[in-house]
Image 1 (cartoon, rainbow, N blue to C red):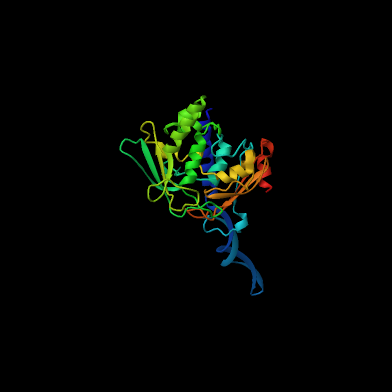
Image 2 (cartoon, rainbow, N blue to C red; image 1 turned 90 degrees about the vertical axis):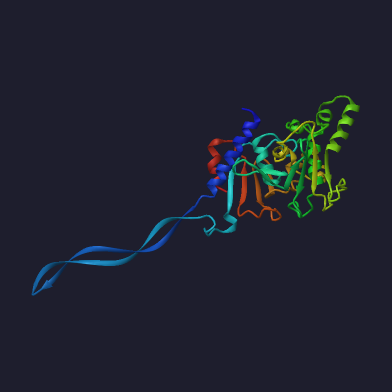
Length: 325
């Protein structure tokens, strides 16, 4: 099975789990019920015992099971945890290097692209509120939402996405999905050339073709620039589908400085996984579990449940292992 198909299957499975988690909850309640019954009693009349039949109505309390919509169910906040066993622990959790479904499952919680798929798998705005192609679809410009931040409250601007896409193309990254951005001018040359001069020329072309712009249309200067809200991509040929490509994990804006600080295995610690997605990686125990909490700074609102990933490969212990938590 191809990795593309594996990823799609994983998304559908995750959606199925989320849908199941949102189904009405079952709750037992006590309700009063009127019960009518026929009673036969023996009484004494005129010195003789006779049987008298009468109808008796009384109220009793019964326990019944009802369905309660999730938003109405009373549940302690700490108990709202969606638990999913992913089986194998990821080989890597790096936006520009990951390729397998269990890796991408982590990334799509921690980060968000310029666009994203909705429940019908249609491409809708993500970090970008809008996008526009030029007349022949050889250039695409995204406009980011005002006031975006990472989960730690720091500024998220277009230059972060500039870095992410350029890092995906950079041959030093060597990601398995690097070719997915080959429509960008200079990408193939930078990514595949063996001649040093050709590599340098390709890198220069990419830096001109993937560029973050400020409100005056000037190149952005740093990651703190709050008016750096436009990202312009230029292609070698018409690419009217590239707004959908921009929803994929290879465009997710991991922080350059955290990658440098964490070194080769930066991805293996929640300390360096600071993203802009709906969830925050609160803790990561390699080969045991990953625990996610709602991102309080997420632009679309805060989730109402935590998520826990387990990495249990023994099928005989998967359900008991999750149930014990």
